[in-house]
Length: 298
Image (cartoon, rainbow, N blue to C red; front, side):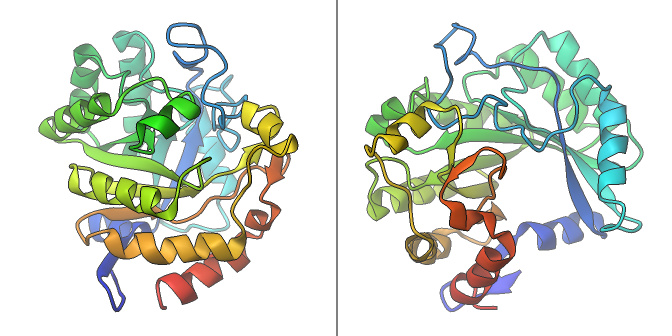
């Protein structure tokens, strides 16, 4: 836990050591899913910021089995982690969007790996039918399950602008049901969405932290190649945050996060192969050093 002048903050690394007693590394997996906002169930093209890879550019090869993906991820970080554990992170696209039996097979394969400490599932709040919730509950009895929900914003105008495809009460119901099932809920929030003020962003953070989420990810808006957002950016219709502006927003948002909500992310580095803007975000070490110094005060 990090103590600042405003509040005590619980960062992910500290939380993982508390829970598992060792270094824990996240391995991004690709379960071969798609998204209802892409296949026509809700819409086509996805959210305007989402890449063709469904935000899974850092995930392993979907052609491999889940166990083989985990082993490949382990090999990839072998030089960084000794005698640690791993989080099996189903990252690409919507990872509860499929037949419950198939989901169970994938999740159980991940949970059954001896080096996996927890299973994390990224999804949409509108893709959690009761049958899928029951599968998640079952897996949670074997290994802890985290469900990561892509909320991004609480503001209806912005949600429509980014083509999110569901209303805020859908998110509220999902959080309530997931928490009733004993599952951890991590909510994704994007800072710098088109048209939002700093006050709008702070309202979203407050809402998430008071609404039952056990973790939060604050993500800088990235412009990625091939997205509808890229077209708007290149046409000059939207702007991205400068480094100083983003640090300033974090300074206002982070103190709003209570110590019972784990901070899973305070920035993000988009895949440099498809990153259009802001290019400063690609200097991950520099940005994180500024956050530690100016936002966290450590």
